Length: 105
Image 1 (cartoon, rainbow, N blue to C red):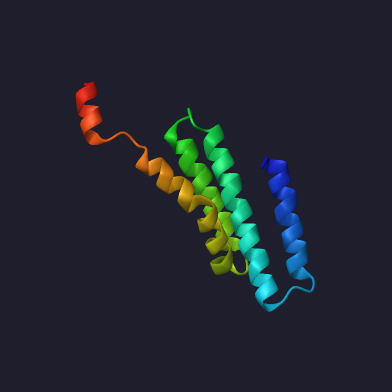
Image 2 (spheres, one colour):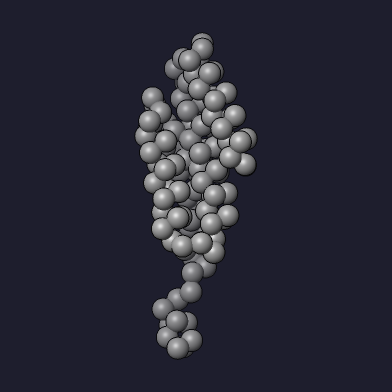
C-alpha cells in the first residue's frame, strides 16, 4: 500500500468513524485502520531494507505514535498487531543463528 493510498484509506476510515458508526461497527473500523497502518509500516520497512537501522526504527516509532492518537487505540492496536505479528515471526524464525555467524567468521 503506497503512502498516498494509506493516507486516503485512513482519512476515509476517520470520516466513517465521525459519521454514524457506533459500537461494534466502530471497533471494526478502528481495527481496519490499525491493520492498514500495520500494512503501511511493513511496506515502509521493506523499502528501507538496505538503509540504516535508525530509519527503520523511526518508521516504527512514527506509526506507533499515529496509532496511539486514534480515539480507540486499543482496537486499532489489535488490527495493527494482526497485520505485523505473523511477518515478524517469519522474519525472526529465518534470522541467521548464532552458530552460523560463528562459522562465517
